[in-house]
Image 1 (cartoon, rainbow, N blue to C red):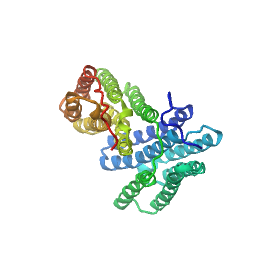
Image 2: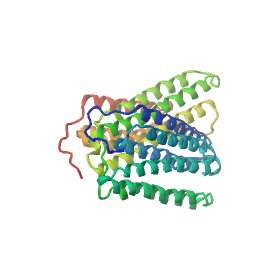
Image 3: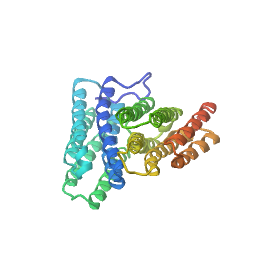
Image 4: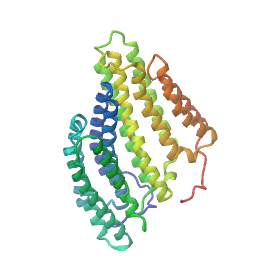
Length: 380
């Protein structure tokens, strides 16, 4: 298992990587559905907290595999089998998400997560056997990941409540510190175009989940409303907003955002908020539909915020890690300002209208002002 050439031409996502992503579609869908139910019933604190915890595991497991694959993807039979074992862990994790939301029971999610991570330990140990200067960071990865899994098993002994949340935050911080511990002396190689393509593909997954979940909710609502006008309006506006988010995300050249280890950490870690917000957007649309059909007693203002807050987080996140360094002053003013203005959407009687208009304006500005060549971006 020798490291891949980070300058390899025409490096793209492999069929195995695309297959691997499919199981995360299941996990994201279930997590988003559970968030929808919690928000629709007004259980905001518990719903958002549970969603943040569950989505951390989804994001971190996916991201770790993705960065390993960009460095050591051999695509031989053993690599494929180990990857499929990780996929099995994702499905086990996904099966336990409802109980984690409803009862704080994380036994099944932790089991699935540990399966994913132990398979990752095996991958790193295999990579370390190739010798050379990457043996040390590979072994540190294996040791660090294995040690944190012990903490997650101990996490199951902590009773449901504030202490459990504190422990989760602490263990999560230790988990995301493993790459810093492993690579503080020697860096593993990464292919900038390949890695950013993988992030783009996962963004398509979560945006696609928004379209699918919204479409299913709209179909379910067809027989529950007297007038189709508001339903059609939400349908059109959802498509406009999702398309605008896609347009904004893929506007900047993402490969420029990971020119150094520090920048790659910022890029990867901020994507937790980008991915989670994109998936939460669909839950917000479903909450809006619940209010429209009378299945939720939330106020229109509260329901609107379940849509606009995820969109604002998405915009600020992608602006911070990819747009900011590749844009002129106009774009760097319009995007963050637009993220703040979407929070005013609840003032209008028609849901998502102001948000759609603001995002459309942002897209127009991006079309008129393409990315600025920035060859002066240096490693830091």
